[in-house]
Amino acid sequence: MKNSVVILNEAKRSEESLDVLTEGHSTRHQGILRLRLRMTVVLTALSLASCTTGEVEPQRVEIISKQEEPTQVGTNTRVSFSTDGIVRAVMNARGLRMFEKQHYTLLDSAVRVDFFDKENIHSSVLTSRRAFINDVNKNMTAYDSVKILSDSGTIVETDSLLWDNNAKEIRSDAFVRITEKNGRITNGHGFVSDEDMQNYHILHPIIDAPAGAYENPHSQAPLSTPFKTGMGN
Image 1 (spheres, rainbow, N blue to C red):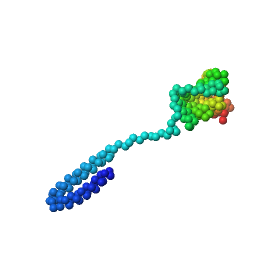
Image 2 (cartoon, rainbow, N blue to C red):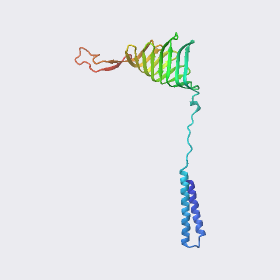
Image 3 (cartoon, helix red, strand yellow):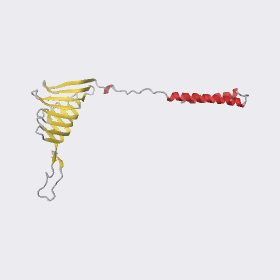
Image 4 (cartoon, rainbow, N blue to C red):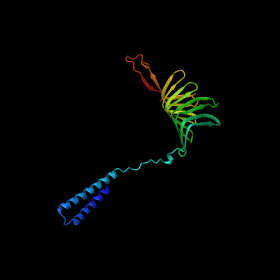
């Protein structure tokens, strides 16, 4: 655009110089020269404009800070957690990214943790799609389709839970569904258990009451609609 303005200014000066040079020539001859000059200026300006608009901008590349890059990346990783020389848990994950400066590790897919009791006997297994490990205290937060299956047959399903490596507990504040071996199902919010899944309870269970379960036999207008109530508040 700037080049076009310069050419137009130069053309104006050239036209003024042309008037001086053609002084004394016929009016018809001066008109022909001016027309040729103007056409040349217009064509030159259009050519420059097309070249300017056709310029390709350099590709922008996003710069990622080195602090955000993982220091280690692994696949099909296996990690053991021990207490007093006894293996209490073995973690397997399909994808792993470790951030040493930030002191945490991300498990990207196919997370599986096998728990063992004090006698080193397998007690339960935890699975999830992803997990976050605090590398300072080795606590792990599992999330996305979390499931625990104890060797006794109890199944716990939730969206997220924390495995406290120091307290040897499994906790969750999310919605929890527990299916026992005998088929009994309990839903609720909040869950606490030991690693062996031998002692567990839901903090706020939800009871599904059938129609008329809380009916007052002496009332003329008994309750007939089912409802849910939270217990343990």
